[in-house]
Image (cartoon, rainbow, N blue to C red):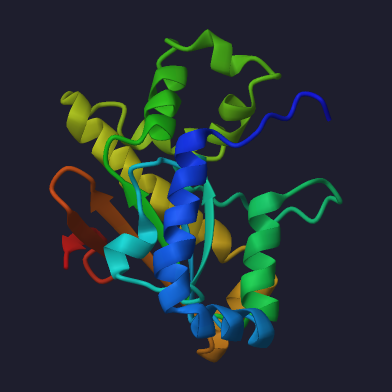
Length: 216
């Protein structure tokens, strides 16, 4: 693999700093995690966006969350077609093998993936319409919800509403997985929809009773 290069110096230095401090001070805990395996209480499906730091938001330690990240925190519908399904595989592992008690979908403000969906739906991103566009085909999961925000005049409000709909779409699609629906019905699993405002540090939770995202 001649295309692979050594780790950048700044990352190597950061690793060495972590190993000498955080790891050294908590080495017994890390060894316990390694020997006993993981027992996370919750799975979090969040966006790949580098500004969304799930463990920092909830003050979580290693081993507490099973985290899966993808573009725009989307979950596709249940499709057992024998193809490659990374997000579905992560959900299956969390629910059926790790037996997590909570499954959280976390959306966020200024989501580039959701913005690209808007641009594609408005005909301003022809490159995303190409069959070869992985982003475009992934955003097809959210594309049907665009009609619900098409008439929103304020662009920031439109983006935020579609970000909320991305979370709800994922929650709806999660319930198409038989093992998720069964776990929810038995009370072994609860689903939660959240949205965080990166700039303000806010966190909104979807309230099924009102059908709205409410600040926590």
